[in-house]
Amino acid sequence: MTTATTPIVYRLPQERRLVTELPGPRSRELQERRNAHVAAGISSTLGTYAVDGDGGVLVDVDGNSLIDLGSGIAVTSVGSANPAVSAAVADQASHLIHTCFMVAPYEGYVAVAEKLNAMTPGDHDKRTALFNSGAEAVENAVKIARLATGRSAVVCFDHAYHGRTNLTMALTAKNMPYKHDFGPFAPDVYRMPMSYPYRDAFGADGVAAARQVISTMSVQIGADSLAAVVIEPIQGEGGFIVPAPGFLPTLAAWCRENGVVFIADEVQAGFARTGTWFASDDEGVVPDLVTMAKGIAGGMPLSAVTGRAGLMDAVHTGGLGGTYGGNPVACAAALAAIEQMETHDLPARARHIEEITVGELSAVADQLAGQGKPVIGEIRGRGAMIAVEFVDATDPAAKIPDAALTKAIAAECASQGVIVLTCGTYGNVIRLLPPLVIGDDLLREGLGVLRDAILKLA
Ligand SMILES: *Cc1c(COP(=O)(O)O)cnc(C)c1O
Image 1 (tube, protein in one colour):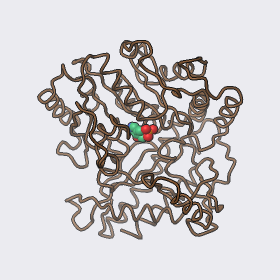
Image 2: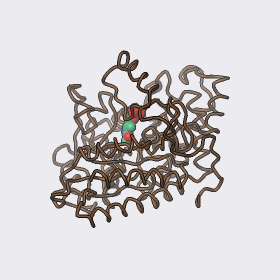
Image 3: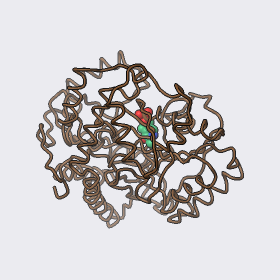
């Protein structure tokens, strides 16, 4: 490890070790119980049931040790049982598990708010409100923006994912599986084209892509009816789409000039994941409101909205809240997780992971091109948020998404003990979200299994 300031100590052997077929007999038993009792609408990537985890590995009920390149969807950045987080959780849980901050407040909530106000982009006066899930944070950000502006329209983007509650389903782009037959959806939501350099007409010209969006918003909505623009600075579920340079700053500047609240949904891309503390930092974008969740608390459910004091404090007393929001145990976990990210300089570690990952994947792409099988359309992303978009090799210029190949590659990796996730509007993207504490050798081994799966199936 070249970048960590303090060495990471692991409790479990950092190895891929398969002692049964996958899923093994005990996992298959659990799957039967699950089928009889768990709602069918909830799906799992793996058929393997987890019992333990540490660093870059997950151990299943049959004793198999798998390489985790998914982090439970970008959550366990500091590991799935980081010792400092576990200790903070155990200590807090032995004193106070819950009071409800709206009933009897406690220091942990205040300390997390202080920390987020200091960490998020911009040095203006900020306030923070805590919630449980990413969707809840996004809903509250929209509530705050509407109240503070006295306007109701909200803009979101193609390929966006913001959650599964009614308002966030309306903001989310993809019908299947997130929205299908769950309507009617919340009104006054408008979807604009996202800068998608690999596929859109503007390519690397993010400023032109943003100007097109601005023109459409002005014509179809009118700035003085628009409360907020909600955008993921790097899209997650939609396919790890990184907007072209200039897209985010141009939109943010227009929002500022027009009194529109610019909301950066950093739920997936935030917290050291992309090599900076927040993905917005990359181009120096300062959002009015930032939503956070996933990587914030080492695996405990916690989310936050942090933003300009003037906007946040526009809300009347009692207008925001929830029974569990900013739960004491989740706050203790967040403080410990953030300290771990700082101690081990995990933003630097994310950049190091990018170097290794992009290097390995580029070699595979070259090899495939050399064999006349250019199924890798694009490798993109930043830090420890890297994706591969797969296309039909028979006519590469047409960039026809190959979801079947993508699914087969992910399944092959799973059968070999490497957890990779898929994503993308067209289901043709494999995304890599390893824990930021994964060791170089284990990461390389996981990427090697992915490489072999791609070469075998392409
Ligand atoms: C996952 C995600 C959400 C929703 O978070 P939940 O905790 O699942 O409600 C919202 N926005 C983005 C960008 C996400 O990746």
